[in-house]
Length: 253
Image (cartoon, rainbow, N blue to C red):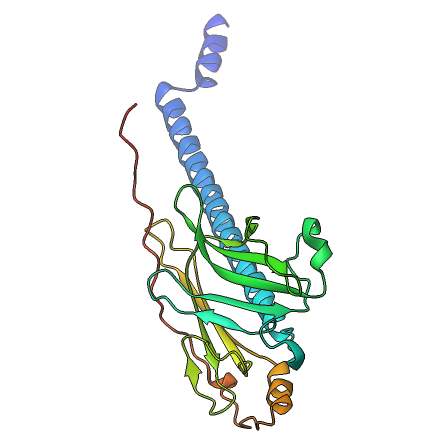
């Protein structure tokens, strides 16, 4: 009787080989589950990053559109409402105009709401990283040379910015704007987003914005605006990118 019970106990136990096989199978299952979870998490992070980048690009381009389409001009003070555009292939362009839009206007500068001059250009932070900046100044007040303009970040991680202007006289596109008596019929913005890590190529976005006040500005001077529009023929442009900041550290630990 004692021998029968012992044999039954022996048959109910697991051998070392069976235990090792079970552990191996469990490890393979856990590895597969972890790999699936890791891939899903990596894909979610990548899609979130891409979605955030697209959202930032859309907001920046919409802001530029709102500012440019709201350009203000009055014939009585031509010098006050001039559009100023400089072109630099290596440092990026700069554009300045008076707008009635309050988009991207900080609350601390609400005193100039409704009529301000904005200057948009590339700047670099303390680490040398380029960013798209915007400066707001009163449009109808003389600039104070003793006070320093407050630079605001319109978009970080921007390595290129170029602007072109459509001449309302002949509809040609110009790289800079120096005509103090004429408002461009349209302004084309090209922004290179990203590309500041030296690994990921930048995303270049081009958008042309019609300036409605240009027709009025031409009429006040007795000039006729060319009726042909080339805004819808705009294509993405390749622009020169700013060089990445160099490491200026001494290497000390």
